[in-house]
Amino acid sequence: MRPLFLLVLAVALLSCGSRKTIRESKKVIKGDWTLNTIKYSALGAYEVTLLNDASKVCFEGSLWHFIPNNNTGTYRIDKSGCSTGMRYFSFTIQEIDEQTGLYDFLLKPTDAKGKSETNQGFRLKLTRLSDTSMQWQQTVSVDGKPFMINMNFTKQ
Image (cartoon, rainbow, N blue to C red; front, side, top):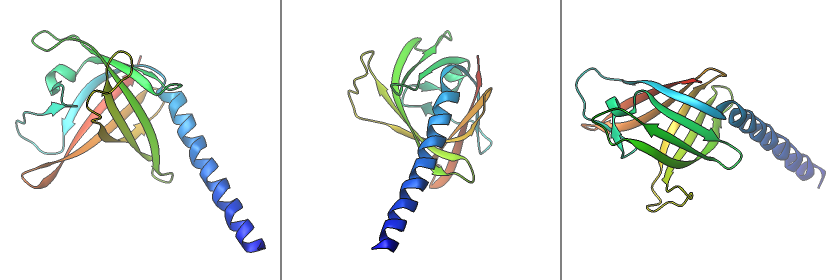
């Protein structure tokens, strides 16, 4: 009985540490960010529609706002020639590996009231997060090979 109790206690303590890391990440992500650059892992001209919304050109310079206490946010695209305006989303941060600092980041488009019409989401890796910068990485398949999209943000 005692070994089982110790095992349950160890699991509980480890899971609390993971939640603490995620809570700290939510504090850092809170606020306003600018999506500065989007880079691909392969050279070439690619027509990529990010988040089933707009092209790389439209997303670069977009303004993002994260509200972690209810896991929601917005982004605004303002470039001419693009479909401009405010978009709404919900997000979830789930820890993958505390040693590397890599996280799963799930972003789901919603309407202004927070309702998802399609239940569609986008799984990204939150590969860097500091008080001033953040990087998301999405891996997709192009011609059967992995293709990475890196999105680099700076905090306002």
